[in-house]
Length: 140
Image (tube, rainbow, N blue to C red; front, side, top):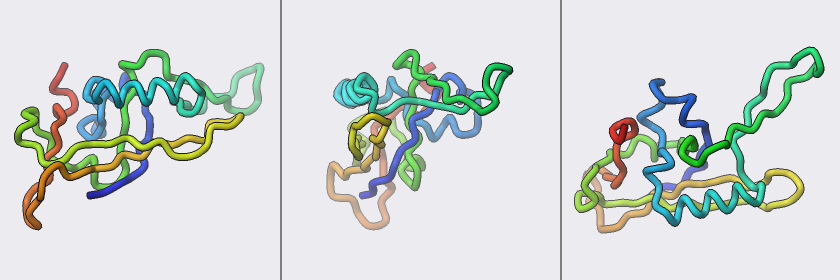
C-alpha cells in the first residue's frame, strides 16, 4: 500500500509528547522485526544518535548514542503509515508492517529502515486501513 522511511527514535524521551501516538514501539514489533533491528544495530548499521551540546573539552557538538536498551527504541514512519488506524484485535486488521533495511554497511552507519504497509486482504477503495498494533501508550 505504501513504503516510507522511518526514523529510529528514543521512546523514553518521547513518552507523553504529541508524537507518541504515531510511534511504533519496540514491544509492538514482532519478534522477527525486533531481531532484524537488533542485528542491524549490533553490526553498527543503525543507531539512535543525537547531537549533544558542546562542553569545555569540545567546541563542537558531539554525536551521542542513545540506543541503550531495546525497549527504549521506537520507529516513526514518515508519510501516512503512522496515521493508519490501529486495532488491538488482529482479526480486524487488513494490513501489516514489513521492515526493510536499505543501504550499505561500511565504516559509517549507512543503513536506513523503511516501513512498508502491506495489505493482507483485498481492501475496498473506500475502506479504512487497519493495522494490528496496540495504539501507542495503551500497553502501559
